[in-house]
Amino acid sequence: MDGLLVTAVSRGSELGEAWIREGHFKEQEENQEGSLKPGAHEEDSSGDSAPDSDAQGKSAKDAATRAPGEPWKCEDCGKAFRYCSAFTLHRRTHTGEKPFACPECGRSFSQRVHLTLHRRVHTGERPHTCDKCGKAFSQGSYLVTHWRTHTGERPHACPDCGKAFVRPSHLAQHRLVHTGERPFSCGQCAKAFRSRAALLEHQCVHTGEKPFACAQCPKAFRFSSALLRHRRTHTTQPPYACGQCAKAFTQVAHLAQHRRVHTGEKPYTCSECGAPFSQSASLADHRRIHTGEKPFVCTQCGKAFTQVSHLSQHRRVHTGERPYQCGDCGRAFSNRSHLAQHHLVHTGARPYRCLECGSAFSHVSSLLEHQKIHTGEKPFRCGD
Figure 1 (spheres, rainbow, N blue to C red):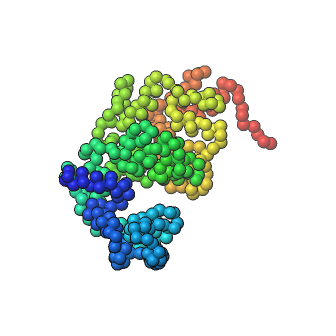
Figure 2: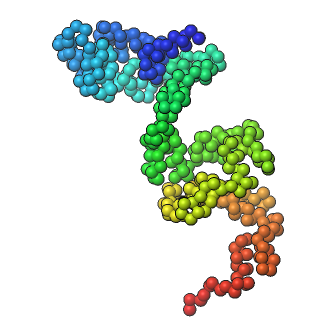
Figure 3: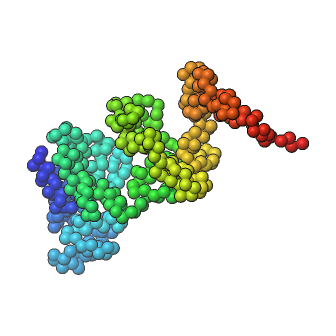
């Protein structure tokens, strides 16, 4: 296996990154060998080099005027090719021709080898097996990439900072950190992201959709990363524990945020009014009070909110969902604060105390109403 991989990686380096992306060992080698034969353009329509009518006409015309050994030159972009077969394949990037169709789903491809690889989606064939762990892959290039998880090899290095990656796509995404480019923009709030996946996850914030559901409990999440973190709560003890209260967290960043509860630290300050916050997300929510921005819109009635949690709570008006149930009487509520308030009925607790006379109340609204006795305030006037 080691020898095969060394050969494969070496061939991949010689042929360029396109080889790594497009093919696997046997099929791609056959395709490359066929395209490098001087007479490869004489293959029939079953081969990768099956010429379209446009390319065939150009090839015949060029063949009559070309000097021996002269390269095949593309009139659209000026690229030159040694063999007609390679020229024919390249022409399809301009014409859009995809002559190789999948009989299962109808999807078409510009090269036969791509069709061969695609058909494994339907057959489930995975002929390339890792000798280390037994994992199987449909393409040799996937096996080459996977093999790096065992060897630790990271051949794609960033020229700006030297950080190395297993895949060229990961390097391309990383380089956006240096350029500052965020090519994927949200149509609803103009936020921009470095990857399409990040944009798609962000859009769930506006819709309130939570497509990532936990298989072990009813919880659902907007982000796949949040689901992965949540799963740890079912399988292992959270690894990051607070030394002051023993509360544990699945992420070190969450532990750092939690510690501010004990220290009272509030490092994020509003530039408009000076209000301090312990979390940057809380500051972002607060700033919408000043800007009036309400980016979270209900798709059913059009009502907009400053916070996604408010949208999630509002959507229960439409769905009728009441996920918070009282353990004492079974009564259910649409939000957690209403359940907490209801619990006071069972416990008899009266946490809201009047500083003037010591009277206690179970609801803050009741306390506010009572305080008018001491202030003499009479805010409600008869209109007549």
